[in-house]
Structure formats: C-alpha cells, structure tokens
Amino acid sequence: MPITKDHQYYDLVVIGGGPAGLTAALYGGRARLKTLVIEKGLIGGLATYTNEIANFPGFPEGITGIELARKFEKQARNFGADFKNTPVKSVDLKGPDKIIETFRVTYHAKAVVIATGGKPRLLGVPSEDKFLYDKGISFCATCDAASCKDKVVMVIGSGDAAVEEGLFLTKFASKVIMSVIHEEGHMDANAAAQADAMREPKLEFRWNTVVDHFEGADRLETVVLKDTRNGELIGVPVDRCFYFIGYLPATELFQGQVELTERGYIPTNTRMQTNLDGVFAAGDVRQTCLRQVATAVGDGAIAGFEAERYIAEMEVFEKELMQRELPGMIYVYSPIDERSRDFLPVVREIERKYAGRVKLSLLDTYKSECLAARLGSVEAPSVVFTQDGKVVGKTRHLEPARIGAALDALVDHREPALAE
Image (cartoon, rainbow, N blue to C red):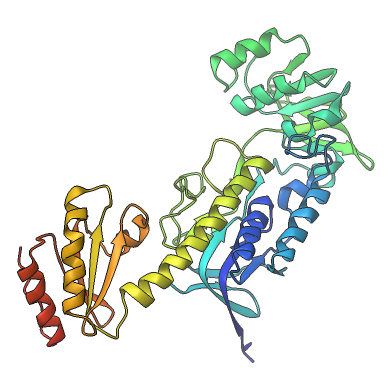
C-alpha cells in the first residue's frame, strides 16, 4: 500500500546540519523565516569528530567539535529553526516552489541552502573503519595537530595538501612519516613545497609504499605499509595517521539540478548563489580554497542573509511589480544616472493622470539589482508594462506621449504598440 506523504511548507529549508547549515538556519530564523534544517546524521557534521577546535574565534582555550556544534544548534533553535533527522531522497529545485522529498514528508520551500558538506576520500583498506576520526585517522592537520605534540604521526599522500600539512605537523609532532606511492624524490606537490619538505629534519619518507591495513586495539597503533616494488609488508608504529588524498563533496543528490564542477563541488558567487534562483550553497560543499569551521560559518551567514533577501524580493516582485489588479507601469531607474533622475517628475505626472487605472512602481536598480534582473533584459532608465501579472512590453524611449499611448492601450485591454 503506497505511503500517503504529509506536505509541509517552509520559507527556508537548509539541507545539512554542519556549521554552515546551522549558521544559515540561525540567520533565517532570526529574520523570522519559517526555517527547517534537514540532517541525516549527527548535527554538526565533520566538525563533531574533532577533539579540539583551537582556531575558531572566541574560544581561546579551544573547544570540542561536539560542544561547538551543540552551541550552534541551540542558537538556531532559539531563533525558531525546526530540525528533522532524516535523509533526503530527492529534490526538485528548479521552480519557485522548491520540493524536498524525505521518506514520509514532502517539504516545500521558497528558498533552499545546500550545506551537505563533504566527506574525506578513504582508502578502503582493512580495519580503516575502526580507527576513523577520533580513534587515530584524521583528515585535518589544522584541527588535530595540537593533540600530536611530541608524537609520531604518518601522512598519506604527496600532493600540495599532504606536503604542506605534513610540514605544519612538524611544528608539533616529534616525527612525521610520509607514505609516498612514487619513486624516491618524486612527489605531486609544487616544487617549492617539495624543497621545503626535503630540508625538514622531522620529515621521514617511505617511498614506493601504500597502506595495506591498520592495526590497533581501541585506538590506531600501527599502519602496515606495502612496498609496491616487492609486496613486502612493513609495520610502522604511529600515534595518529592523516589522510590528504582529497575530499568528495556530498552532491550526488543535486546532479542534474544544480550546476556542479568536474569534481562535484557547487560553484557560487560571493553571495552564495548557485545557478538556480533561490538556491544557495555554503560550506565544504562549495567550490572554495579553504574548508574550515570559520569559513563555513561565514558562508552560512551570507547564504542565510541572501535567502531572506531573495524571499523578500520575490514577494515584492509577485505582489507589487507583477500584481494583477491593474495594468502596471514599472519605471526602472538608477539614482546615479542623470537621465533617470530627470525623468522622475514626468513619471509622477503620469501617475497622477492615470491614478486608479494604472499601478505605478519605481524600481531602483542601485538598490534592487536582483529585482531588476527578474524583469529580464532591461537597462535603466526604461519603462516596463505589465498586464495580468505578466510583462507585455518594454521601452527605453522616455517620451510621455509614447508611454501614454501604451498605457491607454493597456487600460482598454489592447496590446501596447512599442516597436522601437
């Protein structure tokens, strides 16, 4: 028997409950948007696996990832955000009604923030899953280096991130062992980083090796490497192992909907806007140069703010600019353009003449660039005519007689003659 789904309606739905998503929800709730966070796992995302976050502003003594996530969640809840712990099955984000499907509920939203984050690329070797995150295998030197003071750590990888993070770890660890799949002296990192690494006395290289498996009781104790030349297995005792072999963005759900890069990240502009109206992306899922809690929070703040502005503009666009009660005249102008300013008194005179028969709206492109863009290809100064909630004509010829003739036609329910 098919499940009858409940339909629930929100202003803003945030998909993902990490630092970026929680911050976006906080901003949405504070703006009095009806806001929902959908998270399939633990609230806080990858940050919750970090024992100590020492570089997030405001916590000079450091804070655990779980504690910080709880503070984020509490603050979002205090501003009225709702939470749902469930996976999203599918989305349809292309229209003005954004649809997010879970197993039992269909959620409708005016705007969506995608904050599904990323997941570290894994090796898939035996016993790897036993030691992930707080049990010995880490993915962020910036996050976990402080806990490695005077300890032996291993770095897997030889690209820019691996070498640079390995060098960073030497400031804390007594020894940093790098497992490199290539022949001696060959790495994938840039030349300057390689040169610095080769000069660092705390760095030890294990060339021609890959990880075969991990060993340990409650925590990681040994990384067993395999020599790619002869298959020999080499057990290396370590206190912690760091992977720097890349991340995989959690964007499978959005393929065919939101534009993705070749690596699966979501490109945005500085306002966190994706290629779809009303859809924003924030945090590790976004194409960016740095992925930290601090940057995720910044992304989330922008995304939440922009989502609120988008919803407000949509309401103005639909209820005022595209109103259906009367024929409409929208004067698109710029206050920094002399011709635009000079025509304002004429517009006011037209408004008086057609009072009660035509709805006049002024659209300042300097303040409302996005609203102007919704009208299509239009430059300031120009006049846009609407009828029954649709654009029926545009003109850049600011001639009172020409505009009056067009308005007379609209009032008489005729098509305005606006041939340029």
